[in-house]
Length: 323
Image (cartoon, one colour):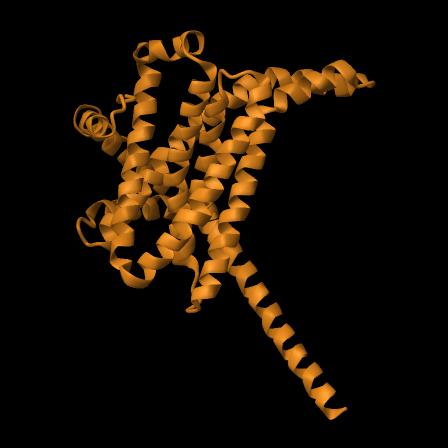
């Protein structure tokens, strides 16, 4: 009997430790997810553009394929890669983050350029008429997964930096939880956004009450405007997140701390001028200045990427430059 009681006591102790570990993982995952919120917003805002121009029945399958690619990016490649780097070469993580941030600045600046000079993309619309839709879908999905890899790397690295536990396995499980939860949240939201007009059409045609039908018509009318806003938010988020990563990296590595210090000083001064909303003002000013810096860097990178890196990459891979 005493042996049974001792066994039950051991089981209870193990259960208590397991419960504490679950609590630690949940708390760490929530904290890491909050820290990565800016990149998550970017991811959610950028993704809907990849289904633009496709038929309604292809929208959800495309999003599902991108979501699976995103999950593979996070769990199969980034999670073990980042944990290995963190253990063996932690000094290279910040430079790699800065490279990813510079890529986001380039992507955002290029979108601004195309918005100001839309004639530069005349051939894009014709692709849907002259090229095989299946091949075009493959290219769009591949492009989305490539961009997602950069954003996922930022998310997972930010999350890793937030986890304070010395336990390797707690870090690994927390990163896996963060990666999976963010992927489900982002692509669930994207699926809802891109199908909102279909939901609106269904409500307008089939609901019994006048108010429900009017709400459905409102959804249909509002969706093009929402997609336009999301496109703008996605571009701004790319510049803000990319600029912030590069500027913070320059400060952390002591390569050029001046931009970080200047932005921090300006943001603090603006925050002190509005005592009632210091935190919000400091965040907004910092994000705005990071975005401006990201735009400047991105514009500077456009000729380098299109005239040097693009042709070299195309020669190495046999692919035509996309820009």
